[in-house]
Length: 168
Image (cartoon, rainbow, N blue to C red; front, top):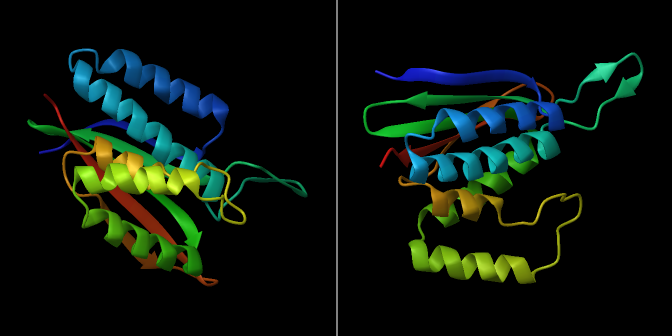
């Protein structure tokens, strides 16, 4: 059975990131190795939602800069699970699927090499991050990253990623 530790759905702005980050830093101190990895993976997942979610808050006529999504951290006897979900354009979903499949097939050595390669490449158009987030997540995870896309309206898909980290 999974125990829900954190569940958040809403805008992923700096205030939210700081609050959840502080909780992870203090709430998982009994698992120092897992805590560091949980924190790193949380930051990557949350930044992806903040930067790339197709949903943005609207206040009056102003569209916000931060994305909307959700993140859940659960616990089992042997691992912690982080699951994020956000709305993405269909073309982004297909590109993400290809990148995740490629990453899933790599071992740790190949992932490190791929990370070096990506760092040397220029940023893609519209990209706000450093191009290595998915590889970072794969290196921190103890299990293959699971991704799932659910078609939505207006040429968009719900994008869900699940990452598991051993408690040891």
